[in-house]
Every structure is written in structure tokens, then in C-alpha cells.
Length: 620
Ligand SMILES: [Zn+2]
Image (cartoon, rainbow, N blue to C red; front, side, top):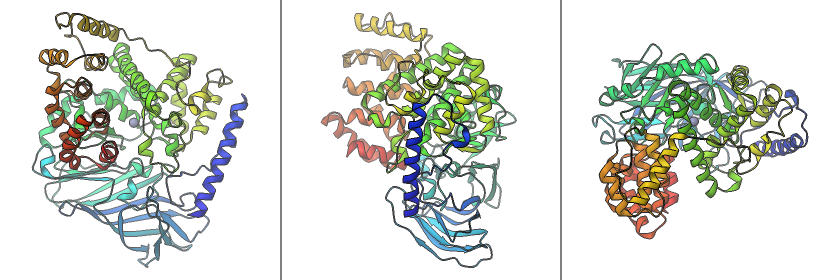
């Protein structure tokens, strides 16, 4: 462990001086000089010396004790014949370790790290090809969410799912848990009667009688993309390569909502090359899922809060699909380079949306993203406003903000504006193809960008300011959105006349409503809120995005009529993107904070670790 920390320190030193040199020189740096020895500071494993090539899981899912138990067998590559194989673990119970012939291998734990877990040190020899670890998860395992039947849509069967990103996979599999590694995997998963397991792999489409299911993922992926969900699931196809898994009573509405999925895959391929993962299916999870979606390859995990009945929130599916290229095919080698996953994905997502629904529509998404980014920049620590992050000692999950997503997007859009769309598209197509099934750090990308697209214009375009400095450079593109200008004059009219008579909302999309609610001035009082609510039923909207901004607005205006609806929402929904701003806003006054604590008593058990970890800190 000490060796690892030392080499990391020198790695960073080299890396910083390297960036400095780059800043001072407009000449491009040959790719072979790029730092290829960057070590991920969020793993305690020795993945640069001994690396896993393939993992086979053999696990049973026990809903009564809320545990997974069984084994994992890692096939390893040990070119320098090292004698200690180090894996990441956190909150696991290890029973025994053996090699390919069943011989027991000695194991011990290295120094515990509160953030990163307990490194498992396994003694091996030059002949060790495979290492089998018998283990079980514990009730503390952060990746796992176990739901009682009452917390599901069908209320009949329990449900469980995993969330690996960013550093949670180690809490359900002893593994080298770093995005800097790519492995293939297979699995045999045994579940109770009447339930179906699905993974980020080739999946079954119907239940069998044996209750054991086999999975293969033959394309190498980083360990954070290994994923499992188990429930009373059924599958329905949309077309030959897309379909939906959901609980039976959610299946029809989900299929109807996601009916454009096949067209999205076609549009994405048209833009940046072949879809490399064979199938693109989506599983609709129970509402406790902490994210909008998770791009687990072949099977995106999605929140049910995007099912609005009118397909108005499907940009999330475009986002997860785009990750099939940016993130899953070309992966950030460390979490400090997270923007390479997310900034590219937001750019790609909006290009898919533009191809399907037009420029006017997509500019609304871009402008809402820009506003979120501006709000974030006001409160976010400047150290966390750079695209390239320095997160050593921090949980990567705590550093997730709109910076990686929206600042990353606007950097790419600025480059597009400068070089033209055609050059941008052929560059991105080549970038994905040249780096497929590889990991990459920011510095490698910048050298590639300079060599292949912006030759000699790195300084002119302020690329290093975008990547290494806080805030937004002055060459950030300006979004003009006609549809929002109409909304803004509607707000002015409403505030001036105090009536809704002149509000012409019949043609408004979800995004216009969000813009309207978000941009109501702070002086809007609870009578005016009541007027809007009575006319448009905003407190009981079926659209979660509109609800979330409406509740935030209701807190500011102390519009108490909305509070019972807000409570129902907070207890039912576990998506952190909605919860965090609502609880933050409630925590601003003593009265609201007391109310929030009361609600949280009931709600907390419905949230995944990712969410309650964030909310605990807000309400403490
Ligand atoms: Zn994403």
C-alpha cells in the first residue's frame, strides 16, 4: 500500500509538471510522451502489476437476510510474477481463497481506509492463474439496494439492484475496482422462485424453472459497469435490438414511453459509428434508484421518474445510449477525468435529440443545462470547478456536479462552433474508433485533440483555461432559444397583471414549464402560487421534473398547500438529483428544516446509500 501511495505521489508530480510544460508551449506533444503510468488514486489494488482479465461470479441472492453469497473467480495476468495480488473490498465477509487447483491461498488485509475500504492481500506464486474467493456481502454493502415488496410497483415480490459507479463495486465483489482496468465477466446467479435476474451482459428474456441463470459479457468493461438487478421482471421488445425490462404492471407504459429507442440507436450510429454492444435494452427500476439512469452496458438502468406519459423526458435514454460510446467504449482512466465520460455524453445526447426532435427542441435542453451550470458555479468551491479534478482523499461521488456534464458539453460545443460541425463529427468518430475498449486521461485526450482537430489553436481556443481553471471562459457559446423568450414574457405578464388570463400555455412542452417555474421571481407570493396551482395542477403534476422545480419554488414562497404533495414525493422518489436541491432549500430555515427532518424519518429507508449519504449531510 505504501508503494502504491508513493508511486501515486510521483505520478502526480510528473503529471503536474507535464501540464505546466504543455501550457507554456503551443507545439503539440507527441503522443508517445503522454503519461501512461497515471495511477487511479481511488483503488488500493495493484492493478498496474497484476491485473484481472476475466471474472466469473457464482452468487445466490438471499432476500431474507438481504445478502449475496457465493464466489468470484478471477483469471489474472501477472507478467512480473509478483507474489501478492491486491484487491479492493469494502464491507465484505471473506471466507476463503484458493487457486485454480483448489489449493488454499493465504490472505490478509492491508491498512483500512475509511473511504476506499480494506485491501485484500492474497499470496500467490508464479503458477497462479486463477484466484477464487468465497465471500458474502454484508448489510453495509453500499452498492446494494434491497427493497421490500411494498416499495415496488407490483407490491408482491421484493427487488434488489446494484450501483457500481463510482467506487461501489468493491462492496459487492472483491475486485480491482478502478476504471483504469478493463475485464470481461461471466456469472451464474441463483434467485428465488418467480424472479428474474438481469445484468450488464447477454440477458435472459423469460424466467426458467431452475432459478439459476447464466450471463456472459465478452466485451471488456471497467468493473464499475458490472451490474445486477433482480425482481419480478418481464421483458417486452421494441424492435430487433431494443426492449424493456420492468415489473409487469409497469411494462406497457414503459414500452410506450421508450418507443423511439430503436430510432435513437440508428441516429447515434449515423453520427459516430457502429453500436458495439449488440443489444440496447432498458430496465425500469423502482423509484428508489438514486440516479436518472446508469449506463450499464447492454442494459441501461433507469428511474421510473422519466415515465411522464408523453415521452417528454426521454433525453435521459439518449444520454445513457450515448454512454455506449463515451464512457463504456472509451473510459475515463481515473475519476479525476470524469468529464471525459460525461461532457462527451451530454454533447452526444443533444446531437441524438437534435437528430430526432430538431434544433429548437434541443436548444431548450442546452439552455436549461447552461442555467443549471450557472447556479452551480455560484455555490461550488472553485477547486471543484475545473474539468480535470484532483479528488485524492475525496469520494468521487461527492464531487459529481454539473461541471463534468455541462462545462464539458460547452467546451465541446465551443470547439464545434470553431471548427465546424463536419470536422467535429469526423473527429469524434475517429476518436471513438481509435480508443475503443481503452481507457484515457485528460492529457492524452488534449494531445489527441490538438493533433487531430485544433492543430495550433489550443491557446487561441483557451482549451487549458477550460480544463484547468475554475469558472467559464469568455468564449463559452451563447444559447439563443426563441421558445424560452416567449416563456419569459409570460412571466412578466403574470407578475404584472396577477392573472393567468394572458398565459398561453397550450403549446408548452415540459421544458417550457420548467423554465417558467424556475424563473418566477423570488417575490412571487403564496397567493400567486395558489393561482398557478389551481389553474395548472402543478402540485400534482405527473411529470417529476416539473414537480421538483415546483416544490423548490413552493419552499421559497412558503406555499404550504404544496407541502403534503412534496412529502409524498420525497417519501416515494429516491433520485438524488431531485432530493438534493429540495432538502437543501428546506434546510435554509429552522421551520422548514424541522419539517424536512420529520419527512426524512419516513423517507430515508426508501433511499439508496448514494442518496441518503448526501441527504444525511444536509440535515445533520
Ligand atoms: Zn452520464
